[in-house]
Image (cartoon, rainbow over all chains, first blue to last red; front, side, top):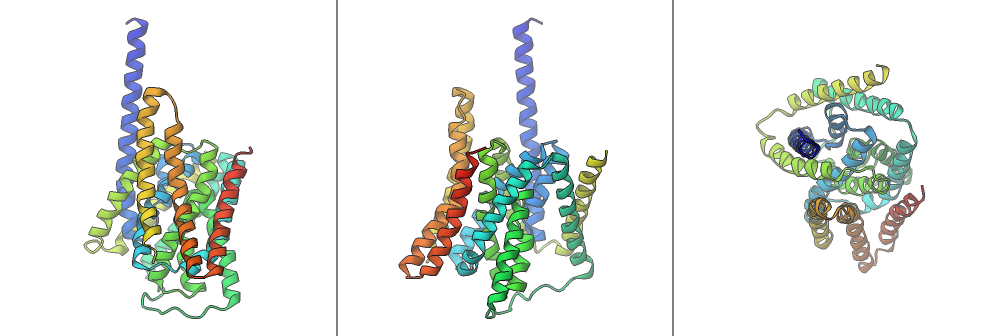
Length: 275
Length: 87
């Protein structure tokens, strides 16, 4: 085979591999959207390990890409909540400046840390999330009542909320997750919001927080645009399907499966550092 | 009340995604990533624009406290964009 023919073949093979990669990303995103809609959690905690462990992405690229996908997916949900008037704008505005600041600081921390440390911290976070989910699935931990009415919040609690929201932003910017895992309990337990309002408000805040962290990575050229497109276009229909099948599947079983997937991902991440 | 920011949020990210897809095609033909970057920036800035509109709506309702908080969040994010230019 002459040089031109060999070059043509290599271009074709490269193109085919890229297409396969995109298809895997799209299929994975469909599954992530489906599972996360039923488990009631954002897709970020599954997206980053999926990209790092299954597709061998650099952990920082995976985090950057995940944050932009979160902006897309959470914005669709938040627009519905905003229109319905389910978002508590005052609470969101009170917590968002520190959350955004946390996300930006988190993104800079990840950028300066070595890859191994980021992987270890991500593994530890996933371990925490999986254990929390497992606890909820196995022992049916009581959640804040959906019908609870908003109570008057003391200034001390507001201050505590602002401080904890910085932490939520920090984890979001550092690990490419939405941070709803921290924001919803924060708003329900500390700020005294009814759980449905807390979920809607968190969904609105998640987009802003992810955008704050995402812009830092984007400016450093770490975001993979093609992966963002493939993931976002898979997650949205996946989540719609998940929401539709939610009544047919037992959330407890899905939570169990979800927590085992996260547990496996965290162990593999931690093992990859030791190995 | 928040119909406009909700519409911005929904269609802004979709427009950003479409721009990014268009940018990928442009990159293959013209070898420039400018349109992709524009698409991604549109996605990132959409929640910010929506927040700004919410702030203006609050100002129209004479909720100065809410307006200041919304502008504070926008200022923090804009500061991060500006600082990320300096490596």
